[in-house]
Length: 254
Length: 309
Ligand SMILES: Nc1ncnc2c1ncn2[C@@H]1O[C@H](COP(=O)(O)OP(=O)(O)OP(=O)(O)O)[C@@H](O)[C@H]1O
Ligand SMILES: [Mg+2]
Image 1 (cartoon, protein in one colour):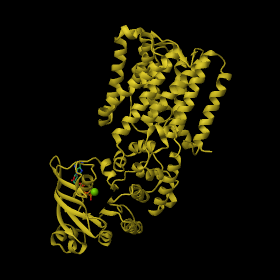
Image 2: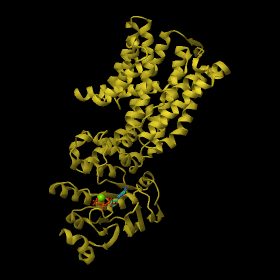
Image 3: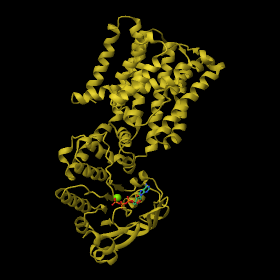
Image 4: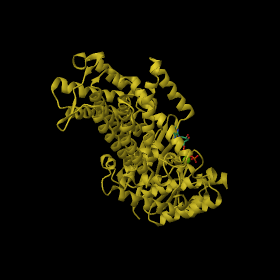
């Protein structure tokens, strides 16, 4: 399998807080790769580093062999990276379906003047996009919310709306930051199935999740972080048997 | 029919009927000024209401347009339309140059920076007396259009009314387009819009420049219509008036922009007896709306009665 993403010696410091320290790992195309670790371990910070929201203090990130660290999030979006947020980042000033449509931003004609003067073809393209967005909402199980306002939707639905928006980018690589957090057991199973469907559609998935059943169920490989450092990496079985992991993390929970 | 289409038709119908029911020239003049303000407020609302950015210096851009239309034809013999275009181009360049560094700043800095810019333009207009007439202002030559001169209020009315309908249509198109969605998205969540590929600084700059150009063009129109310009066009208070119109009518509401412009253009006339207190009254209205009706008139009504824009 081809190496899609390679992270080497990645670090970021916020003042005295070393949120991520010398972390290295690689992700092959087409797999589900999970990042786990206790609260404050640096998982979200790692996502922020890879997707360009934060600039690393040191280290390298390569996508298809090309260095991408220090690039802005919108440049990385062009390269097929999509993500969701642990703390919802839904545009409450827009309808649900528009939130999904904005995910297709880079695939559209974004010219200001043409839009204002309603150039022929633009409206038709927008209608097609709306249909596509409605299908995506269906795909993530939000068919009933196609006409809804974002600010009228329950929390669990908004979590999935973020996934639909990310998928509208037609990404190669999707980062999901705790997609099941705050969901009830039934919803968690639904999200588990959804992540499986996304992976089966050929998108490489990077998952942060506290629900261990879901992680073990879905992941091809797992990275364990603790206090910003890499504690272990391997298959579910390898990680589960690793004594450091048992001591620092699983032991405390299981 | 879509509610926005109905909205445009209603606005057009009102504009067609108005001059025939306006009791006298005073009301026709008031309507022209309402329409001019409405166009400026539409542009400003794209920036403030839709993109979530602030400008406290928009009267400065209006001043640039107005003075381009006064100075260039008077001192250099330029055709008024060319002068108007030059004013708009100069505004675009200035707004574009200052916008990039300004939009790297956030929150209050943006308000301060635009405030400062407006004040600088105003001071420049006051001080360059040999060109601008200084604090006294200067007369503006008549606007000629395709061989005939725009002179009566009624002629101006039809020109401005047509511009207003086109502006409403264009604003609605823009909002419901990929560009408009990106603008609203960066307002809703800047980081979410970034990670789907929106270059937020570029979009903020684009809408800032566009709204500044709207103000500049309407500054030119105002100058020709009144036949006189003064530094008050570019006054800080005028910038605040424009922002108040956005807030009162309703942020992120196209038809709200019209309502805000109509009400607050009429207000100073109604307050004429309070000479000198208008500023205070405007400030009070702005505060009152921020506290008690933060969504503004049109969105509040729309929420109450189901739909609307
Ligand atoms: N922008 C920031 N400024 C300062 N400190 C930060 C910033 N972002 C993260 N941190 C710190 O970095 C550390 C790691 O935080 P992070 O959010 O990455 O943890 P996490 O593994 O995602 O935890 P959780 O499971 O609770 O989501 C924490 O100590 C946090 O306070
Ligand atoms: Mg986190």
